[in-house]
Image (cartoon, rainbow, N blue to C red):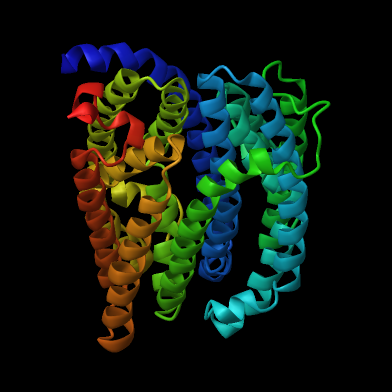
Length: 465
């Protein structure tokens, strides 16, 4: 029966997951290229870019939480056959993008000078980090559109459109990086040489390239949503509709608090690592970039889990929801074992792609091999949380994630790095402890069946009894 459930859901899971996985692979590839290009400018440049990267998670994840609210509502509406309500929710998503995009543009650009100070960035690179941050966040309206509209499209099973837009965004970013970061130079290829134009703007050029790519992505995904047959917001009211917004916010607000609290934890975590010096900051930044490629399968599966569980919940199909969980959890474990194994084997080679500093490479290799062992445990909470997002249950994941982040990672890192004067390795050990706690909490919650909507937890006979 378990094998039948696995194979019955496999085609739907793969069809939804592979575009998201490919999209994230492309994003990570560009992140690799960005880091390598900036890394060629030296340790200070790498540290300046990486020092404020966790604030990027804080802002991006908060916006993503709003998208999760719409995903849950729209996926359930489509599962229940309520397409009109799904379109109304799309219109409310447009209103949300305008509000959130403008709000975060004002906040991030006005605070750009203070963020490096709060992050305990080395005094020598604070001004550089501040300029990079300011440029990167100027197109926040377009970034908000990319995040929220991409999630709206995924909620109706269209994972290919965000993927295609993401590919073009990444190509634009790479080309502009090549032209803006370095000065005009002569390049030799196959025995011939030619002059390549370059603006020589350094990490500011990298920020401009990213900002331009984000702007294109926001416009392109908006056009795609507007033309979509099932979920286009064309003709829908942009005024607040509480009938739609209430259930969306019921899901989004706990998820937003979760992402805000955990991302704030990442900021505190990075701030403590920044206080360890340039070598630790550079090794941490590069290792984070490297590791991001190896948990992509988990997040690809999470997208499929959220959409399919939302559809099943809307249709009140208990069997489909159960089969989804039985199929996707073993699948993500296998994928994360493979990715963790590759990370462990090739950690030194991956570090050398981004730095030629021996200390940075050695330290980054050590922490990467530590975290590689925990990858399978990290994948399980990701997909269980995705299932719960689709069914609209976001309060429990909020509690679990806050406990893991603040009670294990932050307190543990503070004790290890600030009180006991241990280094980066101890901080990553605390991070792994955080991931293992999440595994225990989520798998226990799954085993008890409390992750299901109340009306799906029991059979009619059990209710009568």
